[in-house]
Amino acid sequence: EIEGGTRCVLVGTGLAAVTVPLMAYLKAGDHCLMPDSVYGPGRNIATGLMAGYGIETTFYDPTIDGAALEALMKPNTKVVYTESPGSHTFELQDIPALARVAHAHGAKVLMDNTWGIHNFMPFQHGVDVSIKALTKYVGGHSDVLLG
Image (cartoon, rainbow, N blue to C red):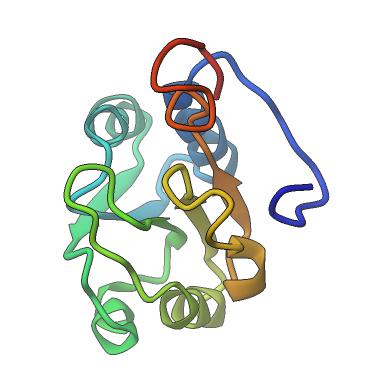
């Protein structure tokens, strides 16, 4: 209800909230684009678990525009992962522009909207899946475990 979504899945941790949709939308032979400033454990999932399943990840500059994203798209790109603001460096991504490019190529847009909750409505800007770690300020900064 907070973001206007139609379905919601709760998991036990923020990392599970990142991992579950990635593994739901990607399979062996697929390609994922992920910002270089992504949440560290999310990066580890991409370079470890996903790579072990034959999923390729390209890390992109989080300040990329639509034209630069277009150049990174491959025929097997199935997910464009976004994080705005970035977990550690707080860049703001041009979500509508990135979503237009992703959708033109048939890719899904997944967004970690942990820091944007109550301030950014991802579904209104082309995001297909919104991800939140509820252990952050929604839950009081790590005094609860929710994804």
